[in-house]
Amino acid sequence: MKLTKTVEEGLRSAQARLRETLAFAARTEEPIVAKHIADMSLRIDALIDVSDLVKSIEN
Image 1 (cartoon, rainbow, N blue to C red):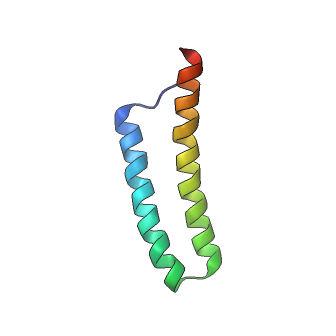
Image 2 (cartoon, helix red, strand yellow):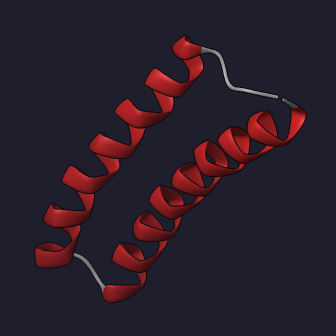
């Protein structure tokens, strides 16, 4: 279940945008907003990691 290169690149791009957004939100928004943005970034990271783990188990 390895992610295709295109999907992984898209996820990493989204994660980079979320980090930029988080930096801005940390200065201007309520803490709950920053927390949820950080959670989204963490979920993307977990998805990529799980995909790599499943791929290594399959081989």
